Amino acid sequence: MEPSATILLHAWRGGEATALDRLLPLVYDELARIARGALRSERADHTLQTRALVHEAYLRLIDADVSWQDKAHFMAVAARTMRRVLVDHARSRRRQKRGGGAVKVELEDIAAVVAAPSLDVLDLHDVLERLAAFDARKASIVELHFFGGLSYDETAEAVGVSAATVDRELRMAKAWLRHELTAKGSTAPE
Image (cartoon, rainbow, N blue to C red):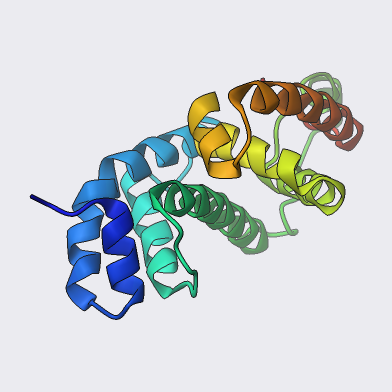
């Protein structure tokens, strides 16, 4: 019988190198589900695909110095890591573009641009960082649910609260995020 992901995480942290090789097949499908959830809010022509996002996040996770508690903890950290990969990717793209991400807009097109704001991953990252500064739990719940694609129950388990608390915290956080993103000219995720 194959050991659980939690047992393999502890074995890996204890120095058993083969535990890492046995862990990936056990968690890959869930990591891919989290990656699909994280990419759902990205633009359609995003250059990172699900598989690449999973692999980049996994590489970062194996280099991370984390005392893994259990599989839920691993998945929560994986969701955060994927968000950071997407933010790093967006920052890199912005730097590569001439003008630091400025878009050339003809004067006639300005009304269309103003009328249709869009979600910018860097704006969302900044706003989530501000939310985390005064309410880390709400920021974590938003990150796990929207970026990680975790259900209310999975998010509740990862954060250590009830599903009802997740629902309540998400409603309050979404309202705050919507307000902050609107002020920045972006739209909040639904």
